[in-house]
Length: 309
Image (tube, rainbow, N blue to C red; front, side, top):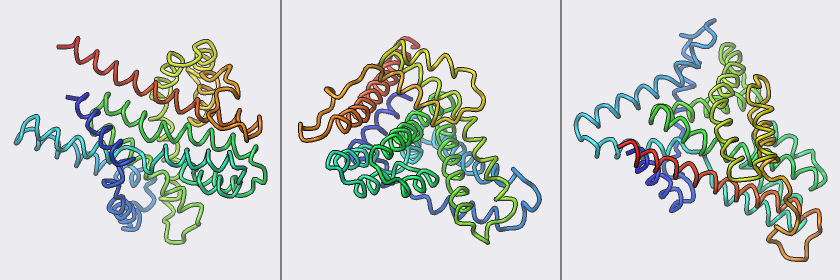
């Protein structure tokens, strides 16, 4: 059943380009604002964030149980596929990366910066605005794109396989809550309560915690589908690390998995410079690695389903 749910959800992503038709987060942001502005969480740090995330997750779990008891496996399927689609990351990752590469090959820094915006978080966007050289923009986009691919798909699938639909939704809502708190803090909204302001650090730490296992699972996968020696060395060095940010760990893994890549692997024409070809080859190599990693996860799911029966 889990494999069927994943395949249906990924199939719809291929049709739509993303889970866009189901990505309506207004209800969640209204719920988050209600919790923090109701006054119920005054001087109770952490409880508000817990309620914001856990109440909708419990609601999804109850809905799944009711669907199973009333409609059986069909009800589980009808609830699980939309919720998993909702839990996938926002935006069209491949389209944003392709637009960035086109602008990069053309040497248009402004267009490349604009195309990369969907891949960047609040802090990275500020850094990107101050960059005056395309060669400086590339490492920032590479790091951001690696994390975006991880959070929008691989982390969701990891928690879905481990905890089911509630696990997938737990990760997505944790990510949405953390991003909203970060944006509100960046804008210095006066309406943001002191408790919500304090919860910003808690949300970031919680997200790092629930990404700790999936990022290491993904790192080992990248070692198998990429340059094993280079990626395994990075995976081993950061296996028990308790401080490094998820984005940095992923960057180390991908750099190791892409070890030995050169400009000849770039698909751009001969009109671009050697530096552009090498940077483009890194992005294209990352896309190929991620596709192979996803295929490996689906294959392992199929094998588990085949031999567990």
